[in-house]
Length: 461
Image (cartoon, rainbow, N blue to C red):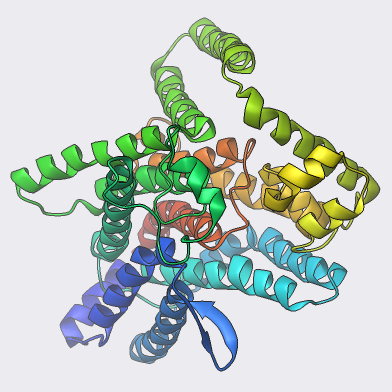
């Protein structure tokens, strides 16, 4: 691979279009939280974020065609490694896609279910693949730019959107901003702007704002470390200072699940760091045992003192009814987008039907949502994707190198999604599904960097 880069330099081959691709990639990442700007193209409902993904896909395919013609890969070692890397997780991704098709079939291929397949699987996966093309060392041909340069548009896209969303929430706290055009007239927002204020930004609820802030914060820090952006000292100081803004916005959301996801993810990082630096086996046993005890105590305290009787009783009712629906449909679930309709058709209490049902759009649990929407296959394949991706990262980053790599922050972003998912649905939404697949692509990139080094050393021998 190194030889290939040198060959390109000698021949002075100019790969056209990378600036455009970088611009489209950064812009698309930036537009993730602004999917509420909706319109139709040829009668098909879409939004500004999906339009960005479409343009990015077209530009990526054009660039891939040009680059492949200019520098085809003939190295068999690289091709074999590419094949092995793909097989580690591709099966679960295919199964996950099949589960979405089955979920749509269960829903009678309704327009709503097909829209979910498009928006919550096809579009975010295409974005993930475009990022993988930009960053991965194994895509069938060479990328003449260093990995650090390719990460910059992703960094700036995430950082600017995180900054805007955080400032948006903070300005809501002081009454400078209230509701957007699509939020006006929705009485559900009034409860957040009263005496018991909770920031929600451009999203549908404070919890959704928290689901966006926490993983993006980890991704921004991780990419910043890996990209090694050449900033002046003053800009680095300003970057570090501005990280306080998403933390303030998170506090203003009053989202216990978001704060817990952040705290638990950071504590796992600390525990992992201590574990990695302990030489004694007894010490490692103590740190693991102590961590389990502390987490158990934390869970007890949250359960005893952290509940909100006025809202949590409704949440537990939703959990109860959701489990009842799972028991009745254990294999295929109820289909995509059918939660509220199915819930309204089963025996529920009068108070729940009148007060809670109009706002019960999902089970408020990621794993129940997967099971109900895309069946047991969808739940298993989702877990399979996560396990394979994280496992592959740790296998290819042995020892203390795991902590020296920016990939650990990308792992924490994924962990925060999974932890928050215990108390909310952190996937079935335009921005949340995009964040999940972008995170998967970035973690795989960190794995590919290690594999690239091995393939290069083999090809140079």
